[in-house]
Amino acid sequence: MPDFEESAIPIPKINPNNFNTYFQTALSEFNIVKEIITSIHDYLDIEEIQWFSLDGFGKSIGVEARNGIELILYTSSVINNIVYLIRSNESYWSFIYDGKWCRWRFPFVKLLAITNQEIYICLADGFINTPPTNTSKCLGWKILNATLYTLHGNGTTLVATDSGVTFDTSIQNTELLIEYDIPNNTIYYYVAGVLVGTVTTELPPSTVNYYISVLVKTLEANIKHIRLGRFLFEKVK
Image (tube, rainbow, N blue to C red; front, side):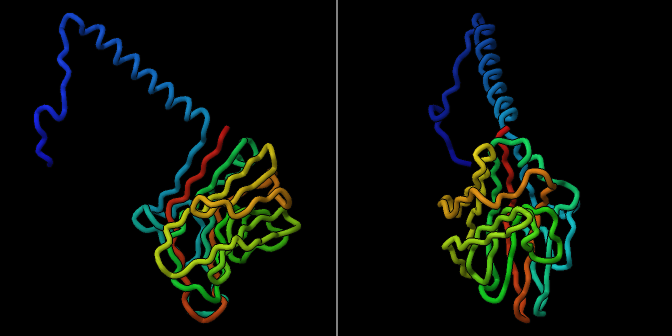
């Protein structure tokens, strides 16, 4: 522990005759902080998914929660092998249905390989062990080989757009952020704080259930592997 001089942390001297005044001032300041915290809670819904366990998730072999910090999906060395995770017991429909502005943060940590693979990180209407199709309702991200795509679908059209971002196999620690401005029907996609896509058409409808869906598919007979951090969801009420 550092060795502080006595003057480094001044301790106010309280006059016993003024104790009630000090107490009332402290109580007033505490109540102000309490009101601020309550206001934030009333203004935002926030949920962080910490990877201590996978209770409540549907998953295949090859999915692991590690130390509350990381989600790991790894395939076998077989072509067209698929590993997946889905939040099967909790829908995020209400985030889209009754919010004003939603944010979904997916921290991307690392890829094992950058060739012959498809990866999806989405909120979706429930694709489980196959990649999304034109009939899928979803919003999220797609990685094809090393290239990152924005992804969204309304149930009749699935759109994947090159974000201009490519990954390598080094540690990335890059935040993939989606913001949904619901009143203005606009979705924004950010990578490490940089806007890479704006979408106003083929938006996922607000009338179905949306689940966390992560999927990795091999396009060759080699192991593929992705590491993701804690997911964070925020909704402005």
